[in-house]
Length: 399
Image (cartoon, rainbow, N blue to C red; front, top):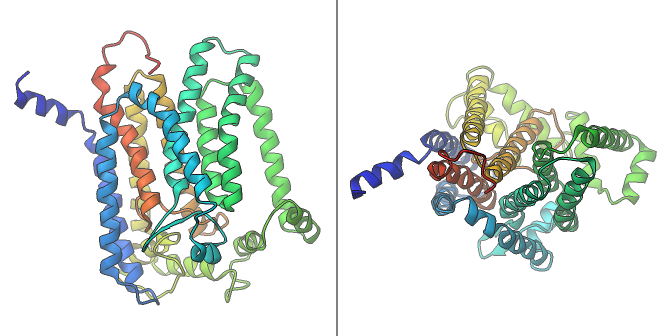
């Protein structure tokens, strides 16, 4: 094939719809970080913050291009290696965590590499997605017909591979990230083919446990029980702030109450770019949506949410285009990861959900979170890039 035609062919295999969505979210992110840091009470440089975030976008872009070169068979082989490296990093951070950040946040989740902090659990997410997808695909190949016993076996296998991650995140005291892994696992389980005779009772039990825990968390005797089970004071404070955001605005409810004021003050069209009047703590990362709401109003906030829905729609479309079971589970994991981040971050910013410290994908300041999300996008881009390898197959490929 002539080189010119080969180049055109390679270009046509790039999903520019996904590229556009991520680029627009990145643009919103850089603008919002600039505004947040400019109006921060500290002496941080807004230019430096934007350049650092842009550098992470470049690194993430390089990661996407690199991952795109891997087809499903190569990702299949890489999955256990990536999972092993991720587990090693989660163990290592328990010993070499950033002491200063741990005092500030209560979580032992960050490495300190000079002026840069790195959170290994963020890059563990795509590794975990690969491993869970491999486990489900391999099991369904071994047991093509779903029976109760086979489905219980699959569920057990998934939980065995998930347990080390959950234990290590619990030791890091990072409940918010743990919830993201639960969401990823739940999404993969739902599409794995496990019968509803197992899923329905399991979901009912989980809902009952969650409801019971929430009931205990709002009563004094219940909190005593949860304290013995390992719950911390700051977690109860977050629940109090969620239920009563304006009761203790000088301390525990400050972040949420200020976020609600900032978003509300933006009204329909916002105050305009770089117009900030409400001080929101940590608005450059976890509370970045308050900057969007205040600057661009309800209309701008809705457009950002529509960008996320557009990105998720495009990822779903790519999944349906490919005839590859392994890719389908990988895509499900990535979609659940991004969707849960968006739902939880925006939900906590507007007071619908308790504060958890989960960043807004592609927008919040933070390199490790951005890198993990970009790696997930790389998996989706790989599907489209290698689509022609599967489009002429007569039956669905395993990997």
